[in-house]
Length: 106
Image 1 (cartoon, rainbow, N blue to C red):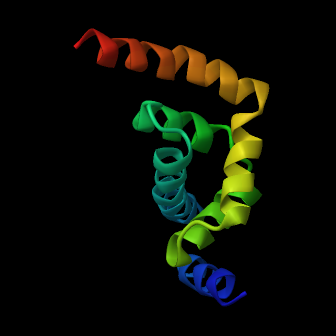
Image 2: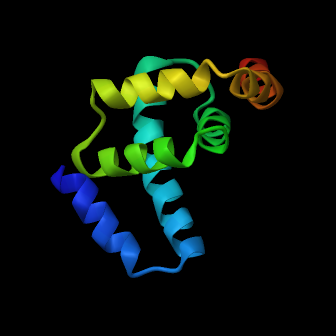
């Protein structure tokens, strides 16, 4: 509850565009931790981009709030929900697979 209030207060002082950028940056930080821990071997940067780009605003703000306290089981559930979306899977196949293949070729 307190983390959501803190995020709300911080974002209230910003323009809508700035709010979105701040929330997305905070959410990226959280998603990075989850991807690294839960999906070893997956190219982190392409995966984060696909997850953030396919998250709803509600999911972005929830993930941003978790950046203050660290990932929780709820965070993992949100990321898993986003990853299971057809659009996210398509993105991961298009962006993550080439990055994975490049890494194996090295």
